[in-house]
Image (cartoon, rainbow, N blue to C red; front, top):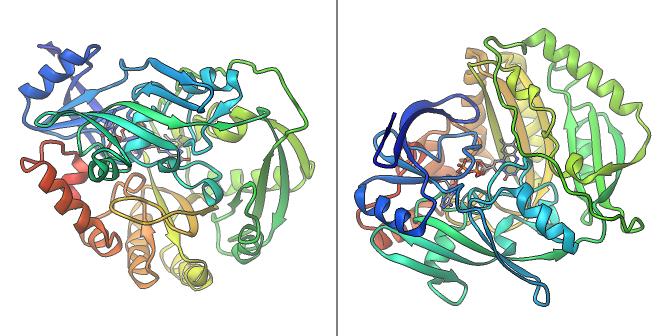
Length: 440
Ligand SMILES: Cc1cc2nc3c(=O)[nH]c(=O)nc-3n(C[C@H](O)[C@H](O)[C@H](O)COP(=O)(O)OP(=O)(O)OC[C@H]3O[C@@H](n4cnc5c(N)ncnc54)[C@H](O)[C@@H]3O)c2cc1C
């Protein structure tokens, strides 16, 4: 249905936990963005709508889809900065910057994600232990706000709103342009080293020592006996190969969930066994392409499609190194009792400062994917309690089920965000399902 630049569409969060019929507008001119914003009381912005939880839509408001604002405005080679419109996808961005041997290293793991979406969720890449989140590469932002109009944001101009906007989940207004500080990249080939590990502890010992590479792990969590067996991957940019840049392909995402779920306890156990066998028997060192390393799920969308229409749940947790072993032991005990079905477990280092809504800190980042079942849900509620016990920060953008109580107790700087946001926008115009659920 299309009326006055608005189109009603059924949308889903990426994990399929939440769906709703939403009015969308897709402006292609700044004037239209201004008019649309003036005409509506409750707004939220969206990019590629690839967020696991519903942070880019709101039931009784409109979503402004900014994907048509996707131009490259200016590249300053000398100062290594680039200004792009927020709707540009990571792949289009990279196809331009890599020609000049430049990029930003804080890229979230899928090529169709937009720069605006990555900035609003303060995304991170594989090397977040050394490069932090995308916040580290942002020089300035051009924001449009329904009541405040056009605002330049940076460390020197409207600093408070700049801080609220990076990782602010689109709640401060529409990010229209972003200026990024670029980093040199000499090659788009990576050398990947693979190390076999038999436990989370062994993995922790390896990753806590490494601080100069893209390091992450994969572990079995499909049964308690094999829990933690896995591999650590260490990627280094191969500076010996001065490869001529080849355009990266990767425009169409192929996320089409099957009618029914093909993942269950047995299929997950089998696939984990095979994956483990293949990886521990692989060459210990190999050369890999940029896309495979930076966008590991590109071309492997079936992993998500296999969860079916019912979807899945993801949880990302930031844990202090000192609590990691105690957390793991308690996790395993609960695992025995609740028998959740975990399809993926991975670890990586994270660095940065936990402030406002930002998923940052000098901690270890655990990622779990679960089949949506009663046992998984009950188990996750118990893990919520461990979050309080071990001062763990759960991810807002990944966990669709996160509730207000756990959020308030784990995001200790959220009150500061809320009061500054309310001061800036007394009418609280920009709202999403998640901001309403969490009371932001
Ligand atoms: C396969 C896959 C892999 C991923 N890997 C990672 C990863 O490695 N690291 C990581 O950190 N994240 C990862 N993510 C999550 C992803 O980076 C974030 O959810 C990101 O926000 C998605 O961007 P998007 O363009 O789809 O934005 P959307 O999902 O449409 O929106 C996300 C948020 O940004 C806001 N927003 C979007 N555009 C604008 C704008 N122009 N102005 C203001 N607000 C805006 C929205 O309001 C919303 O709050 C992954 C997601 C997928 C599907």
